[in-house]
Each structure stands twice: as C-alpha cells, then as structure tokens.
Length: 83
Length: 228
Image (cartoon, rainbow over all chains, first blue to last red):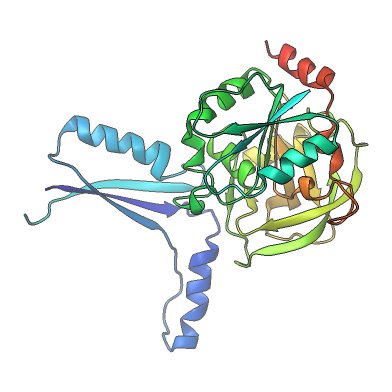
C-alpha cells in the first residue's frame, strides 16, 4: 500500500528550543562537528492508491492540521512501500 | 450575564474558571466540546489545561472540536471570547488571534506568581482595569513563548493590541514580553497567565485576576452589536 509522508519543520526564522537542547547535549556525549540541529515531525499516511484527489486531500490536511503554517513548513511526498 | 466555560478532554482549569465567573458576579455555564451549542451565553472562556495531551501541537486538535464551529462564528460576530493558556493556544490555532505559541525558550515548565501590566483596558475582558495597571497572577506553562513575524508584531504594537505584558522577568522568551493579545475588534483576548487562579484571598497570589471575570452584560452587548 502506498505511503505518503508529510515532514513538518519549524520555519527557519523560528527559534527551535528542542533542536537547541539536542545540539547542546551533543558535546557532552562526545559528538563533535555538529553545528545546528532542528527538530521536526514526520507523519506517515497509508492510502489505498495514489490519486490526484487523494494527494490534494493530504495537501489540505497537512496545511490545515498537521502543520501550523504560522510557525511551521511542511513537505508532502509519496513513498512506495513493499507489499 | 451568562459566561460559558468549555471543557475539552484534558482541560484542567474549567472548574476554577467557572468559580471565578461566579465570584465575579456572573453566571457560569458549563459547555461541552462535543456539542454544537453555546446555550445562549453572552461570552465564552476557553480554559487552561492539556487538551488532547497537547498532542500534535497545543490546542491543534481542540481547535477542530464540534463546539469550536460556534465559537469561531460567534467570535467573528463580536462574541467576547477569552482564551487562557491552553485556550490562548486554541485561539492562535483557530487563527482568531495572530502568531503562535512555542515551547518556552529555556524548555522548562514554569510556575510562578507573575507581574503583568494591563496595557489595553478597552477590550471586552479588561474594562475593569485601569490602563497600565500592574497586577500579579499565577503563570504556569511549558509552551508559552509567543512568536509572530516582525510585521505582525509591529501591527500589534502600533494598534495597541498587546493586552498584557510581562514585567520584571520574561518567563518564556515571548517576543516583546507579550503575555496576552487581542483581535482587531477587541472581543477576543488570549492570555498565557491565569487570572482565574487569583480571585480569592484564601488561595493564590491575591485577587488581581478578578477583573477579567466581572465584565457586565452592557460591555458584552456593545461588542456583539458593534460587529453585527
């Protein structure tokens, strides 16, 4: 069954306190060389088949519900999965 | 007058808000998120708490509760609506108020008696206060950092739509120390601190919050008819 993935990220100009906390923990754990961490969300939606109508609906639900476009950006993409 | 207080799954402060309404001399009406019925109330409070466990984003799921259809429709026609904490988050998710509320900049949940300045006393909910009156009410939130783009902030400031501002400390990283804002018409107010916890001397930090709950019917009607 096809899977549609919606990635939601805080907008670049919005401070991401969670990403900052993760970044702050890295040197303490011995990881060096990472200069920036941004934390977002990934939604996986299973649909019976990929149609224009189904994708339009997912686009709409991503814009109105999964993301708050005042503070977040989103990307919708189709990912075929093994049966 | 009748002030409705809506209970959502995970709401915490509905009973305190109802009590504050009664202490303020008004009649409290318990409203249920799953109904499409405001029961003829003259104003509505969206109380604090953790509706739907704050899943997805705070207030994002409640914003689509059945009763929110009537709340949004009413708000657009001038019905006074006050959102406190989680209620403020629902108001920004509903786009009744601009901007958004993020995790506190320091990532810790904060609980303290907070000093505020009431900068706009011409909203439906702040007529009991003097302009620039300083009050102390409890603040308790994890996601109270108010943000908006620079144009929106400028508009809010220029139009005097910052209702309450944090004094002494900025507890959560909010832009310009903003603790509460109103819409253009002044009938919708969102506030991160909790005035409903400061209405009686027996508990809490004092009675500074009471003014939010004493609004007379004349004021509510004035806002409703101004937009009719």
